[in-house]
Length: 312
Image (cartoon, rainbow, N blue to C red; front, side):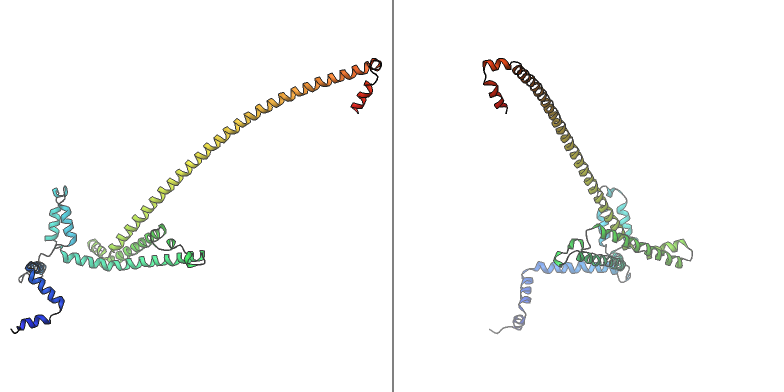
């Protein structure tokens, strides 16, 4: 049997296309999902563009911010307030849909460019300066302490960013005030509207984050300082207790030494008394010998000579 033309065309298709065709043929539900998605996308486009009679005036599609705010408004007890109605009015009356959110995001993206450049400059200067300082401390690059060089997670870079973002915000507000004053012609309402349009809200947000981060790190530093002072105080108290024990041991030793001195004094006194008594007895014996020399010579003629030899 001869092959059909469709079979020849199918055989010429690449293998991935053949697998896709077989999968779609075996799964009609996939085609239905694609059609539903296509229909849903068409409704979204219609809502944004409007109909033929109201071209460009469609209701629009709620954006991410408005949808999130709507979900928050449905949480108890916020669902008992008028927040849900306000969100609906923002969408229906003020026309704040996805197109408006995209425009706001694009506007904020333009405002973020100078903020990003300012932060890059500050961090680059910090990195270069700290790298030079650390390299001067050591001879080899392997000995460089990169924790002191990387411009993140330290109080110095956070303080520098706080000052830089605060300065940028002050200059930006001064510029916005000058431009608004030139365009307002002395009318406060025109000045306020132009001033709001010229303010860099991304810069204000970055300054707020920098202040919060700097304040948080300052609180942590104060907490560590208090803990360090408490440890020092405890250490001083321990040293005082140790000194008291040492003093107590010293007084105990002094008392023992005093008792030993008293006992030694008593022994010395007894020795002196014994020596004095012995000396008096020896003197009396010598005197007695000298007084009885004649009798001794008569009774024992050799005794005096023997005593002299012993004394010599």
